[in-house]
Length: 122
Image (cartoon, rainbow, N blue to C red; front, side, top):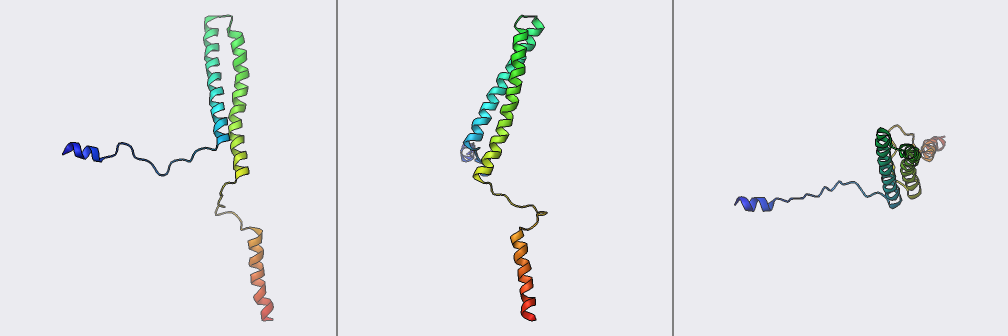
């Protein structure tokens, strides 16, 4: 009986509210950024240990680690820029906040609707 109760429970339950998949260009730039950042971190660790050991390789590795840091910073910014560009080109459903002003067209139509009864009454 206990065995039947265990088999009735599901081992894996899917969550319906999962995050949607990133768009391909954004995902590509994110993967590229992660790989560049990991190589940069490895270079920094190698530079640190080479400088502790007093190896001749410490200076060249330190220089390349500094250059890789600049590249890694740009690659991380590239993810953000790619995400913003994708959103602008493909459109994102946005809802105005409660403090947003109504569009000019709506305000103009309201003004016309209020003005019509006054002109008819005269």
